[in-house]
Length: 88
Image (tube, rainbow, N blue to C red; front, side, top):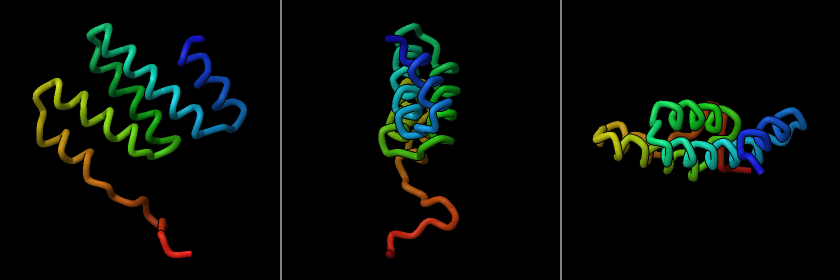
């Protein structure tokens, strides 16, 4: 199945985590097609839905492939969203 189609249906169904995961998968396909700009766009969408380590790592990988090492490092640094707390 097409990762973008699954992402669209997951988003419509309210499953933000699945949509994000599928957008990360779609970004990897974009990279195999030598389209880092599209990969980054898809990763932006994925991160807006669910800020996961996998999405951040993939975004860092795209920046590394483009030789943008400072930006790659920035995406490897975890920054909690405002209002987020690990305390119960």
